[in-house]
Figure 1 (cartoon, helix red, strand yellow):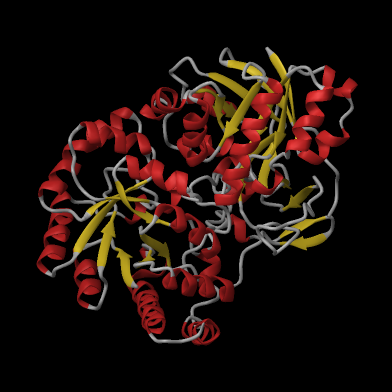
Figure 2 (cartoon, chains in turn brown, yellow):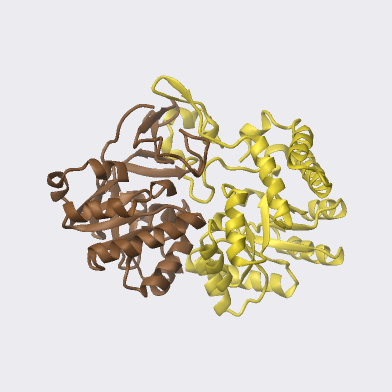
Length: 238
Length: 292
């Protein structure tokens, strides 16, 4: 079982080599905000401090963000080599372009947003979708954070699952809570996690983080899980 | 710009098509779709809607806009083929695997990719085009400057967008789990206060009020103006019978028709937004809070 850490570029910049050493892989970027895509400098910096695998976390991407993500993936592949680089993809266009540019050499996983879109609540993971994604785009793993899907819905295919905790994704928006100047943002969120309290919620709150809304989840074990991915608590407060 | 409207019965189809709607679309109860409770339940009625649209020189689309398991897809295929045989305008879809399967089954019709297809860039549009899609419903969160960048790469593209002042999810629709019951307290569920639109609830963060961010009506209307000037062809009015009934539906339809007429006038963006705001102000609250 691999252990991974999920960081935004801001968090990665502050992480020491010693703290990263304990992990087999580091996720950098965001699955919910295209503005938190890592930069080339972020990748270079990690390459000098970290010997494990690098996973680029990517969100839904508009045209300029898609170009940035493609260029970043190419750069990261050169720095880390195809055996140490992976991309967590949530955008179908990006998936298709990665396949075209890297001719199937880039290891790709279907991101959590893609999983929400594919699975929803009543849908089934036996859908031909996974076979389709694997055969056409080389998707070899699923990013997941909900044990329910693993128990109740398969996957009925030998897909590796990377299980994220302790934040379970509920929804995402493209409108930032800190700035109305979408898409230019200046990263005003500064990795803050906001507890959004409401008495009707089972836990009493959900978490707002990088344009995503999350509930609390736990680490989980299942035969299909090949990697656990921890998202550290970020700065508190608005 | 023309108005496309979601319907749930033959009588609604007749009313809207005779009052200026360019096309209608419906879901079919036996095939899950994003508003399954607002679907046509009877196959005969579905086929009648298709025939009626033809007789009025229009088109009726069926929305099959979920991700389907193999079993569901194969069960639905004969009905979908019958619709094609009767001249359905096309299928509104979001499931690439479904397009793949329908292609293998030899189903030839028009495919429209739903706003839940997340077409935020030209590569995604091309991805769906390769699967036979010829019309794209832009995602609700796509802004005109982003669609302009897409169109620059794709060239001419048949596009459609939801009538955003009335049909707008503040979180990305198609990947939102805020509604589901396991998030809520037993007391909330017992008291039936689990809201349809939890995203519109009031939250508190660090002792301060917090609402999930959403663009203003001015922004949404301004965006409609820009989309129109980019050549967008269809303005989509969703199904909403379970909220306000036919009266509400016709009110919103009338609003959409007014917006289209305003877009056809040679107004500046500022003039359009001002007039459109006046035309859409009456239903603003509390209806907006409860629509999903």
